[in-house]
Image 1 (cartoon, one colour):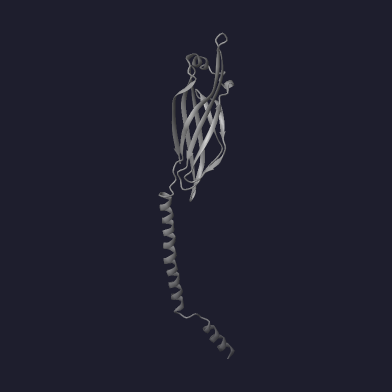
Image 2 (image 1 turned 180 degrees about the horizontal axis):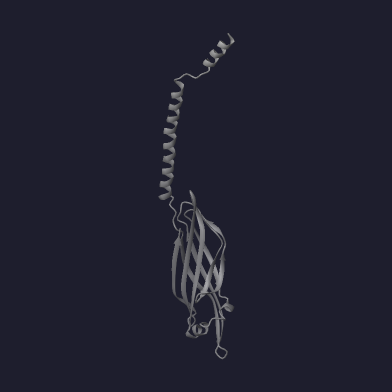
Amino acid sequence: MDVESSKQQDKGIVPPADQQPHEHRRRRIVCMVVIPLILALVLLFTILALTVFKAKQPLTNVNSIALGNLDFSVDIARVKVYLNVTLHTIITVKNPNKAGFKYSNSNVFLKYRSDVVGEAPIPAGKIGAGDTQTMNITLILMADRLLSSSNLFPDIVSGTLPLQTYMGISGTIHILFNIHVVTHTTCKLDIDLSNRGLVNQKCHYTAKL
């Protein structure tokens, strides 16, 4: 009698045969709802990333370059030049993106015939979405870096000193994921020593995502 009773209890705990198809049907319904929803969200985020939130290059513009100080003299007997030059530069960087642009420490370089003769730091910072940041930069020409140049004396005697400024900014824009951005700004100009002014200014801008 005990054995027969145990068998009856075992039979009693077996789930009904029609319950298993019901479980499979419910799982299929959940999958049919969840999977399309996930795909729709992925598609939505992709469309937004490629349209509304598509990363754009920061726009750099050199508003002005002014000659702050100019002192020079020529020692013809010793073939020596004494030179003191200061440039004041105003640069704006516009972030056209829907997210902030975070950039790292950088520098602005002053060059004379490809040789670096001055520099100024640009501290790291962040430009908000759609914002524009103005940078006031002072470049001082370090005369000691010119002493080895064989072109300096002829340039001073001719009355024109060719210079070049260069600025590179590197940073990231976070739109779904981090996007690396690098901008380059190069300006060529001449100092007219006779009129003590700047001439032939031309700037070139490039950016890369």
